Image (cartoon, helix red, strand yellow):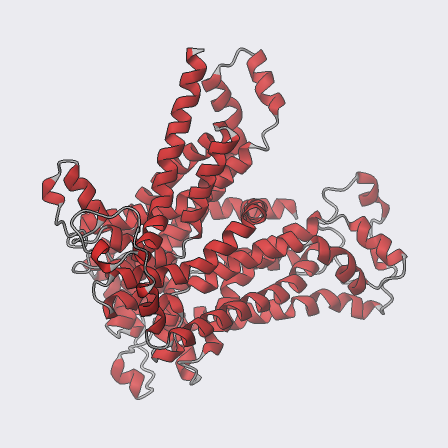
Length: 276
Length: 332
């Protein structure tokens, strides 16, 4: 009796402490965003925003180019995720369902590409983009973000396609489907969870990307939200209310996506990450 | 016939199927009514976009970086579009500078500390998740997912606010706990405390991946293994070391490898926190390459540092990388 009480108490207590530790920064971001400035600039923290206000959100949204940057971020992210999904689906299908010379080498290539050190290649990327007169454009950003998520997308989708029994495809073809038709009608619907998981991670990568846009796009209306947010605090001094409101606005889409897709994403990640 | 017959596709299938068609086109190709040359080209056509993207968007920057690293490229050459080759001068300059070796040492140490913390704490939390009741597990999972899903720059900004010198909640707590000298502490003033904040941020953000993955892995351990171990007289600890740990080993290897890469390359967290300051003291290799190359506009030198950074990363990960590549070859 005593043993089981002891056995349940400590794990549960630890879990609560850990929950607070992990959730607190996120809570503090939202809480600060809603607090009137007087409750932020105070000697004793106000733990719960009782006089909630939207003034900080207004400051953030009214900041120069905010909506342009939202549009930029959304465009670049969605386009690069869509491109990488299409390219990866074709490649993953060939790699899992067909045999040909050089297949092994290609898989290894994509595995190596998955650990590409983008963070240190930005000087070269800057030179390439500059030499082609494409600085301050969303096109190279979209292209590079597509490539940043492509290898993981290929390797993960490969796992999902391999998990679909080949017999399903074969019987569809016996029923008169061509191979592409069999793919669209039979495999594609079964890939839905895999597509969701991979696009979530692609979405996060592209939405978050910071170093590249930092050096490629200097003009204010061609930047993306992460860069804007990193400079926001400098621009607004110590207006932590507005800074936290801006952070909340930036984080919210991902938090919502993640909470909705979490279960599928996690199982997808376990399959994909551990395999590849 | 240009189509290879050995491959992974059939590896997991019954031997009968594998043996059925030793050297002829496989059964499922028979209704694919195209002439055989088109069939042979099909995989290459499907892979063409991926290959082109890789060559242009990854291969080109790599080659370009290699070329830049052998050039004397500063603002003057950049503006006048001059190409001045200078052989291995950049590498010589970097490798003989004390600064570079200090940054290498710092990066390796920083990576080691972070990855060790992440793996140990992440594993413990993963095992805790497996022990908890359903409700508590959901609660903790929710907290972990929140931290995991926070975009990097937003998280970095929030940490700057938590650790803000004035009105930051961390200093308030430390003051209340009796640590009064911390009431107005500037965390970004010294190398050690800046790294402490960055480490806390990275560990906080990385643990969920390890813990949740590990928990997912423990759910796939067959119960029978524990029962068999118990029959052999194994206690809780022995059960852990003889069943859980060996079973989780591949996951632990894989996640450690991924964390090493991520932490070593961590850029936005350090850069957005304090731009590698105070006084360049928190520059790790990627930040050093960026500050030298882009910030100080020594592009050729920066490119050389970039390649050396990749070399260091390859050395650190070579053991695991070799293992993975070998494994993949065996599978094929």
